[in-house]
Amino acid sequence: MTYVEQDKLVLNAFWVNMRKDFYVYIYVDENNSAIYVGKGSSTRIDKHICYVKKKISRNQKMGTHFYNFLSKLIKQNIEPKRFICQPNLTEEEAMDLEKYLIKLFGRRDKKTGILLNHTDGGEGSSGLKWSEESRAKKRGDGHPLHNKGYLVTGEKNGFFGKHHSEEDKKRQSELMKKISIWKNHSTETRKRMGIAQKIRWIKFRQDKLQQKNNENL
Image (cartoon, one colour):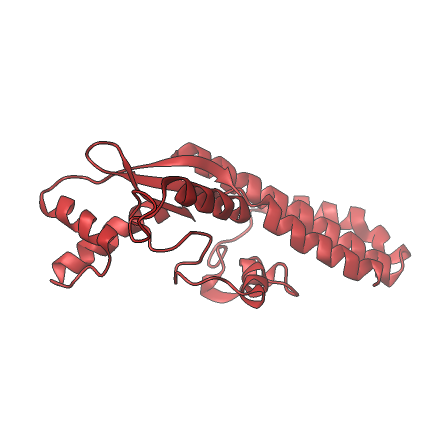
């Protein structure tokens, strides 16, 4: 394995392990007893309620005991109680904690406890166990930046329609002049330097995202 291939593996692992925008959440009943444990990021904790309200508006069946429970509360104009029990996790950490809590509280359908969960946790939204191939695709193996949105072009790119200020352009120009020493390095060394720069860029974007998440908590 070449140094470049090793650095790509490091970059993949670095990206997966550095994301700390996942969390584990719990829904509780009127007695503050846990009834559902889940994991997610962003607004995942509220997606269940949105889904149930949509089903109610269409007069459709809920499909699970948990959604039936939420439906009963919503029809009575009662806001379901829920909270984030552990924020700032990587996805793997969130999966592990989700599985631990579900095992700890137990499942009603298995007659082992109190939760309305129908799986043991650690799955995707489909409720199925991820294969190693699926996990690799989700991580973006082989394309460490593209599948994470940093190399997406067109309207799907977060910077679409925006423009750098003259100050930013000048700063970037000065930066490029400083890194012109790359021309004196071998092709392999320049590739390694490029990967290191991408890691720094990902870390910068992740810090910004984490700061935003902390402000929303």
